[in-house]
Image (cartoon, rainbow, N blue to C red):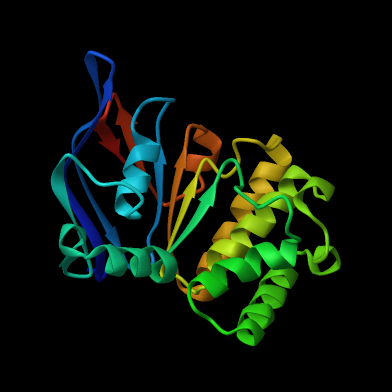
Length: 227
């Protein structure tokens, strides 16, 4: 049996919407092993993005527990949780979240500098990663000068610059055409294999989900199937 990287048990998450409460997750259990490639599939509102944010420490559950390498995230101090997000986890989002005033190289370097990596090492890593994702000739271009696929490649390089062991991708193909989207998925799979990372993707697209060896289907905040 593969080494367990993280385990989530009984996760519940709800949000107050005026006088009513929106229950997004209603008791979810999931295990992720070291080196896993897992897809969380479901329609909009199923809870897949919320689950991704919880296991990545971007949000906290109302109930339940997340254990990462034997440690409860709920026991982490704010500083330790920040270090966890910066160093152990890489995030790739549908909307890219690149800073528009910075170049591709600067966007990737910034993530490394926030993690207190030296300027020289940050630039070295950023150039290597941007080259690996096919953007060696676009280092000095700002997001507005890049296509959607190129911006997503910058976002992937940024997510990897701190050498995370867990890569979380939330609808990484959602703003892309089908051909470019599958190129991004292929790139994520290649990088996962090269860097021995664990990869979890949240997607509504059945074709994207089918590229993963393991798929968890979420419906109305609950797991409906695992394949």
